[in-house]
Length: 195
Image (cartoon, one colour):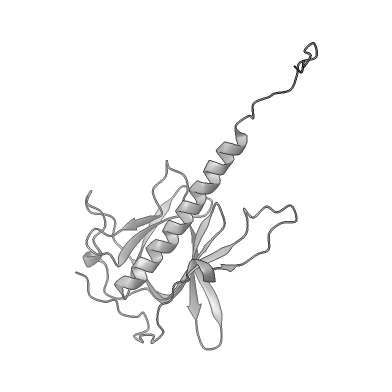
């Protein structure tokens, strides 16, 4: 198995990882006046110490091998998993004593004809390959995502899984709503007779 990643700065954060329970999830935007909550942004989870790596291309059909990735991370910081009903964003943030900056945003792909955005490493449950589309192009580049603890990876998986369930519920609701209701109205030449 792969050794724990080294910080890009050499300093390891002492902050612990937290994941939000469903009861503590924060709505990031108010619902529209018409009650539509489709675009309401929700915080599904936070990992206070995530690692990004420059990784080589996938070598075999087995998938990415985290053991072949660099031992030194290119970036270390906080990861927020944000979602609306139809879109999930991985927001990587650089946090210092004086400021918080967004380092990278990755929107998960919902198109079944395109590669999955998140691909688990074949040799470790703490590492994932991210297939990221370059803005305005069809080009995809890959970054490795890693976590110090297995619990962090489990929290990450749970947050993304919550979004997938929410998205499927929205899609199913749209199908139900689009199904034409049976029309029981009388035709112009029909008369209702009560007995």
